[in-house]
Length: 474
Image (cartoon, rainbow, N blue to C red; front, side, top):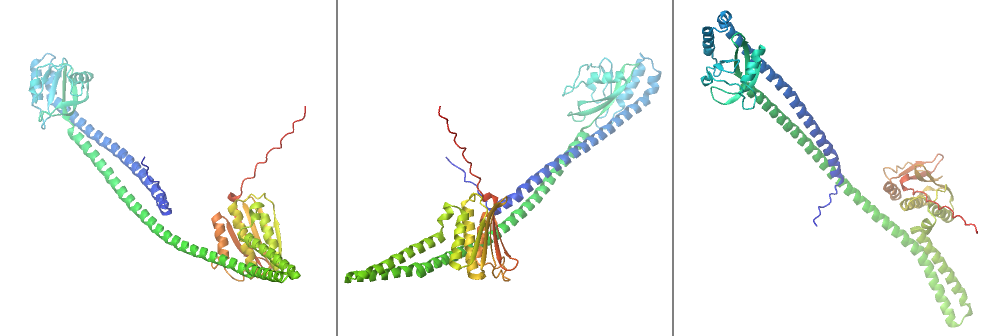
């Protein structure tokens, strides 16, 4: 089964994504909002334009009909309802009133018969009751109904006389009530529709241009983000490589220093003791070969020296990894370390602690123990102190180990800018645990080292089992 490789971004890629994703989302939201607002505003403007154009057409139609009616009102006003001669004269005048390519007047009687249609003469003297346009909109019946009501407008689809193609028309119709005529004229508004379509096309073009501009700005910003991310990534990688090289070198130096220390202790201590044991045993062997009864003395001396070597091996082993740290916890391990330090150096060492049930995790215990070892080594080598105070306690923020002495102090040295190998090791141990390490001068002379591990390295207290209840004998 095929599986896609798991994507595990680096620090620089995470930083770039963290900057790019919100930017893309924000730009997308802005672009959508701008598009919606632009379209809404444009639709309002287009609707206003369409309304204004149609109202202008309606006013134009009303003026046409009013002028036509004023032109033959002297005939209609004095004619009787059954005056066919007057009707013929008015129909002739209306038939002659054509304008533009498609403009004309029409007349229908209330029964639906076409009386005047100069551009579509085939409709004359035919009844068009029930006629609808291609969209199903009533035409003649609606015009007659509007005329019966007095006057008004009607819109429908109608073939243009000049081309025969259908287009939308607006008609204004009025009534000659005594003759039962519906008289009107209409104009095609395809130019209005074309203007509205052009306006909408312009809006879409503007929106597209806006998206292009926003896209170009976004692309530029993303390129800037990615470029900055790459620069930061390369710079961080170079710094990380440099730090890694320094750390590796410090690890090698620490290993060599530890190896040298163990080698010196083996050579100066165990090696010399074992040489003495060899000489003692060899002396005892020679005496035994001679039958000398005094062989027990060098043999006893060799046994004593061998016991001393065993004790020295245990001491070195304890320095490398004290068993009491795993068995009893940090407090007893540091107490033992302080007692041995006092015995070996003659420097008074007082240890004080508040019992917190050995709740530190293994990493924190090892780090604080090594810091105590390193601090006591520095005090022995460099401080000239006569008294050392060690304090270990847990609190609401974690656990703190404080070691202070009455020696020479920092003596103007700046450990933050020029730390020794031991101090760097202490600092790095605390950084790995997310803790802090502080060095300060003690009032009255001396140095204080305070190492604090956070609360995350304290284990939860163990749940105590409830005592079992004794069952009384029946």
